[in-house]
Amino acid sequence: ALHLGHMLPFIFCKYMQEAFHVPFIIQITDDEKYFHKEGGDLEEFTNLAYENIKDILAIGFDPENTFVCLDSVYMGQLYPNVCRFQRHINLTTLKAIFGL
Image (cartoon, rainbow, N blue to C red; front, side, top):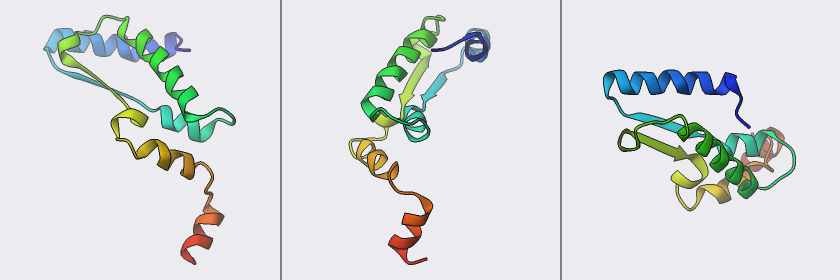
């Protein structure tokens, strides 16, 4: 869940968006949580990201000038499968695969 420390930069960005009438792009990195937290599948972390997006948008960003990019969704159909494989390949395995 998002706490005040997470929200302060978004509050500042909302102020900047209103003051300068500029677009705001929010990148949600659900894939990073998937790689660095034990347990759970990618869909679970994607669902948590959607909850975070709701919290962020509740601040009141201009919908016409705000774009939300969710890594596992925006990068295309192949990326979720790449994430599933990448999670199980460590540096030692990678060296063995490529003969390094």
